[in-house]
Amino acid sequence: MVLYSIDEVKEGMVVAESIFDNTGRLMIAAGFQIKRPIIEMLKKRGYQKIGISVEGAEGIIPETVVSQQVRREMSSVLDHSSKNLNTIFDQTRKAKDDIIESIKKSKSAINDIMAKADMLGVITKVVDDILTEPWTVVNLTNLQQSGHGVYDHTINVTIVSLCIGHKYKFSADEMKQLGLGALNYDLGMMAIPEEILKKDGPLTKEETAVFQQHTTYGYLMLSENALIPPTSSVAALGHHEFQDGSGYPRGTKGDNRPPVKSFSKTGLIHRFAEIVAVADVYDMLTNGRNHFSAKLSPVDAFKKIIAMSGSKLNADIVKCLLSIAPIFPVGTHVRITKSPLPDLVGCFGVIAKVNPASLHEPQVLVYESKNRAKIKPLTLDFSKHKGFSMELV
Image (tube, rainbow, N blue to C red; front, side):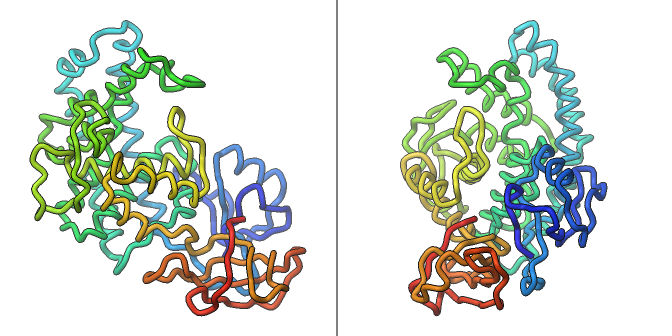
């Protein structure tokens, strides 16, 4: 299977795996020969990539860190809490009441909403999925392929955060605390006026000040809730703090050390907030986010994350992310740009296997000439065959 960009999909191509909507309803069955109206429908629904059957690539299956069923359950949990919390804040936003006072008055109702959402239940399933992997690779392409719903950014941030936690060998209990914090890290956005959230163009100074309050709002919603550990609620409060102290809301500094218990972090940014911050920036850069960044290629996103490392983002956590997030995950559609064999330049292929010891040296299955003609599949191991380079299609 090859993950084709939706803009690269042509009539007559065969879908390699069944496609479901956010509710789990089957839309397109595996083996279906795709038609133009279907391509347009998928574009409108926000699908960025779909799996296409390619001769010789039948055994290539992109890694799935978390199953589609669990993703749907995460989306359902977020939808339940968001809709119910909206009923609390709709009138407050319209009347421009004191949000903090409104949160305090509605504390009991907010706690009840969070309890009924069963967030711990779904986070436990996510953690179980991730902990079953002997080693974790964040398949960015697969996250983008899955992403076509309202809550995808939050879901992606949660998954990436937990993959980072797994790499640091967090215990199951630590993973659940981190997961609850990541799933709710942007909860305070519920209280921000829509005219600010949906504004085209840059925010004014006053609008920025209102927007930045979402970290405090989220913390207040989560704190004093028996079902949300204090270590989880600080992810909402501190995910916009920077290592150099230039972040908000408190200007807390970091020390760029590993986010493990053996290192004391008293008076510094909490380790869960540092992890969520890196995951948040990663997904915002690679998928695009209003008021932050247009969608960047994985290469450009990594360059920007590295540039933010040390001064803004925890350098050790960034290093950890780069060690589990290959630029070219399994299933990625690529083009050969440099080769010691001239005939291979411009040919198309797919990432067949990731090398855990060296993520930039995967195995590539070349199956199509530069003129899009079928050729006998050829496997190139970039760790053994030198002088090759490639680009995303």
